[in-house]
Image (cartoon, rainbow, N blue to C red; front, side, top):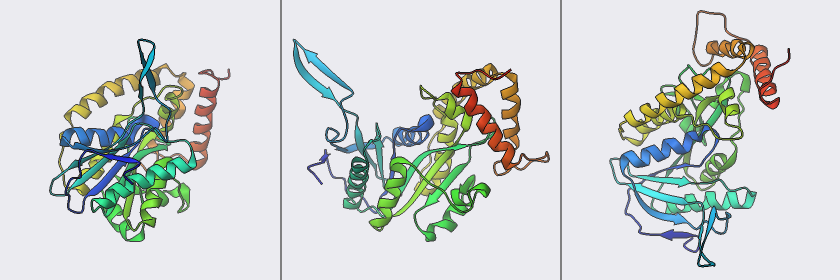
Length: 302
């Protein structure tokens, strides 16, 4: 392992939980875990060597000579507390299948070497909801004994229990691979996905739009399980700024699109309402119309 992982130190931890995140839609997961790391003042202790898996982000040349190559970071942090924690933050997701599996196994092997028995991952769930609603957290445990624990969480729903999914679901990228690899290694694992409205996810193309509302929902679901309390005031300030930006973008959409999207305020699995809920067919039509709008570069048919 040490040929691929550089250790600054090896902390002595008692049954630590491992929490891992990478960039993704809305950067929901990585914002949540990075905020947790900063508020807990977690200390860096190791890093996966990036050069076998990533191209450099930049190359520095001095006096005509290559001086340095800057690779995406993949760092581990720890915090000793009532529940000891290991936090992993990857600056970029690997592209190739073999590289994805390698990184997932390196992350888990570091955790196992320090006594880890449980893993959490965090990411985004693109959902047919409205941005004025509180994002829920979709949970995916990697074994049956965790289902009741997940069901007992406030604002948490099992992904497979959502009506239109028929007991099925899928997770893409390292969030899913890490969860599966953890199961193979005998570790409990739960993936927490914060909801992001489908049209906010579309706003993120080609440039990422951050969605800290969902990061907050993940933290509210996660921190009680980690037995920690953190101050969310800085995150709340960031949320207020992004909400203004999102509302401005929303109001820039054609009235026809806004009227269709407003129906998502009454999505049944998100928020019960006395008004008539929209049907699955209506949801599909709304999603198709929004996707078509963005494909056309922000133009609608007359």
